[in-house]
Image (cartoon, rainbow, N blue to C red):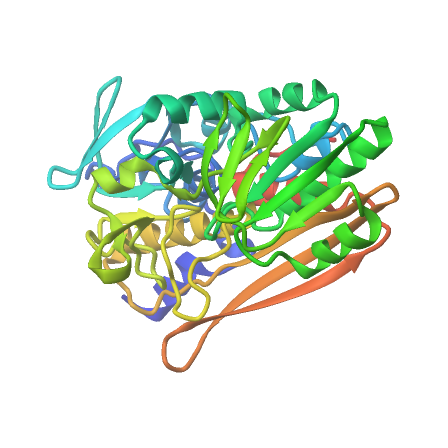
Length: 433
């Protein structure tokens, strides 16, 4: 492949944006059937990859599969949970978005991946692929608390959901509104987990809500780690008596019926709780033989990936993007599992597939991500923190991470503009506010 061909495909700016984003999926070039790309997962990573593929390689037949027809986003949900803001990011109709951008979408439940035959089996049928992108995100690992007692795990999730998947949000808010006082327990699971600052932000906002509503209660935070310094100081200085913070406290089991959490330091009774077990990649990763190796050669519940090119270590026709990725660097382990990071990884995976579908493997294409997130430090008056994370490749080929924090003591909807920007720039959803 010539250098000018690669630059023409992956360059930034108006050049590549001029490629037809409205070309219909399933088109053929020169009488040859279009190569088929199947994307499993229609959230931040999957939809970003689909849009990138339409821009970079409009000749490809791109199909996105997700069990839900509508995307409901999570990044700005904590202020909404306590009534501090409305639900600020609109819900997206995945079919309408696909029709607009020129790929296909079906609402279906993927049951298994057959890598030998290059087929995805769903409840509705079988879909062949030339290239596969798995972007199925995270799931809860309740086995850490209940072993193989799936009934107990189900009861736990129904009564006291963690609220880190979209279909739990409404129940979570209803249960919180019914809280009349007592001890409300929130935990911070051991990493890797979704959006590391989110549990601390939630604890602060709920404490603010308890204080504002005049409820006789408190928030107990059980943190498997040592906490985030900005929040631990905030808890002590502004919410003393309303937030009881316990660092290095790992939950061993939970009895949702007697409302009791068991830790190494003893039992913690609660009146209400939002409890997250450890997290893992979806079970589909394990079924497809795409898991990474953990300690002592045992399989870990994360996707094993080439950290520079995002293809599976088990299959170069399979790419992985988003929260399901395993460790990518010995320096920091996993990429942060956030919405912005998922979009950047989806874009990178889309570029890799576009290049490989046209030219074959090209080892020079390395596209490291970067991400931004906005976190509430206090509710009234509003105070926020902007966290920027960037990456570079060291001379020895190891990915290094840099994190910077920027105070925003007088926010003016920067978090909302950030979220709408992701919708428009990464997903291709033009929104009018």
